Amino acid sequence: MSKLTIRLLAVLALMLIAVSAYAAVKPSPMFSDNAVLQRGIRLPVWGTADAGEKVTVKFQGQEVSTVATNGWWMLHLNPCKAGGPFTMTINDQEIKNLLVGDVWICSGQSNMAFQTKNATTGTEAIAASKDSMLRLYIVPKMGLPFELPKAWVESSPDTTPTFSAVGYFFGKSLRKSLGVPIGLIDTSVGGTPAEAWTSRSVLKQHPELNGVARPSYLYNSMIAPLIPYGIKGAIWYQGEANAGRAYAYRRLMPTMIQCWRDAWGQGDFTFLMVQLAPYMKIEDQPMESAWAELREAQMLTAETFPKTGMAVITDVGNPTDIHPKDKEPVGERLALAARAIAYNENIEYSGPIYKAFKVEGDKAIVSFTHIGGGLVAKGGELTGFTICGEDKKFVNAKAEIKREIGIVVTSPDVPKPVAVRYGWANCPVVNLWNKAGLPASPFRTDDFDMLTMPK
Image (spheres, rainbow, N blue to C red):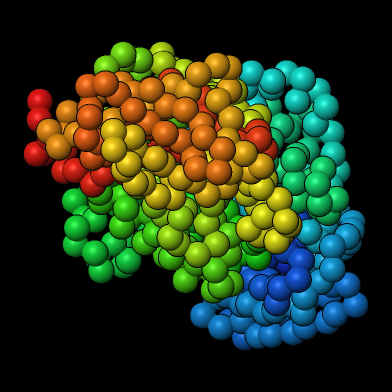
């Protein structure tokens, strides 16, 4: 064996020893260059290591150590203030260009996965997307359980085209209003029901939610690996795959939210949803609607479950496309809700929401919360209202805004009103807004069972 060969083997051996020592302590892939760490919380940092290996993390003047057990380690840093860039040292490894700010999960099905490059304003948005204080992380679609890449990147024309459009516009709006670093984690898959995003152990506690194909598989592969990374909250655009099972969704959505909150162990973090957009044929006569029922289930969660909110998008749907391209208003309305719910700003963040219903003679009077300075019929007379009598047969109705009262709904065919509906259709054509510039949510004042409704 030549001296050169011996030297090469010696160098190789030293390299293998170095790699082995380096690999002995490995942080979670969430902790990579360019990451955003959540400000203001007791911050978890974790990873894998050989049993008994000492792990020391240094960050912003803090030095915290622990010992790995059962192949992994976790420690916590004291709350950090927004800013950066910073460097974190984990034993002999440096993680660079870190920011401290607010981190948001962006999840759901295809309308969350819809990429910025395909949005109506995508071209302009991408061209102006360079922002070193906005960072993006894309979770691989349906990866193996507990596997993540190192993928934090700065927002730029090179990185935003394939990121969630709703997520990007949400983060861009928050950056503008808050002025702190924002991290966005895109974990979304098209055509998926909410059961797939909920843990199996939680679903088993609710037998009425079982029976869907492949329950929990996305929770296992695309949510669990993120936990307990520090976050501010989550935005969620999903529901198309659950249309037709709206009554189960009333239970499912709060169950999934609580599942995530319990797993993260960071309290009731803010959870914001997008209501289903108008889709399918525009009907000129009232009829039952599975999509309307799903929108109702979504709003019930937003109205009754703590620290939740809803972005209504009745104005940005498309009758012929289940993936409407106008995503900028969606992200901006989610950001408005975040500013009010997560950041406690005193702003109007919702369009009109049904509050109460009463009958005076042949008139049905509907009142609202979130009137935002007053109710508005955008673009002409109010549309989208229907009314029925005791026969439960809904007909198109005339609706007028009456100051200090609400909206008066009438029809010459219904002398004794029993119920009113608004936007109760797969593809509603509606125009009730508030003066804050936000559209009203579809609603119904009745609780009629579809199975007993007259044909």
